[in-house]
Length: 191
Image (tube, rainbow, N blue to C red):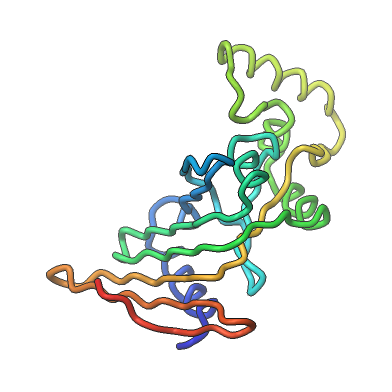
């Protein structure tokens, strides 16, 4: 198989049946303007040949990093399958239409939480957040919750995709796909 997206889909579909929790969890690595790295777990919410999409508060630390340095790396690790996939590439904003469509699929409490949270900002006490959540509940009582203007999607457009498969005695298999213009070049890496 020489299409990395088809290979990703096959591995991802298998992980969805074997991983006990959050098969769509991925580590997102960013770097700020001073090249200081940061990594955290986020959830994959969509993918196609344009890239891999996640959603967040655009005032969060990760969003600030991406505003300063629009390149990121993703890592999927499926322990039950003994596989991982590394993805690297530039990041762009998902469209408002995509962000609106995804936001509408979230549970109401998740929608309200997006309004109540100043993600990544200092919080004096949990009760402050809970009070803000209650205020937002009252604000939108009996009506649909619109997507906050400060919340939306990001798309990582892969330039490199590495598929790692565990093998006995640490003789792992590593397949690397590198975008070369509009096509993908495939090769192997030593374990």
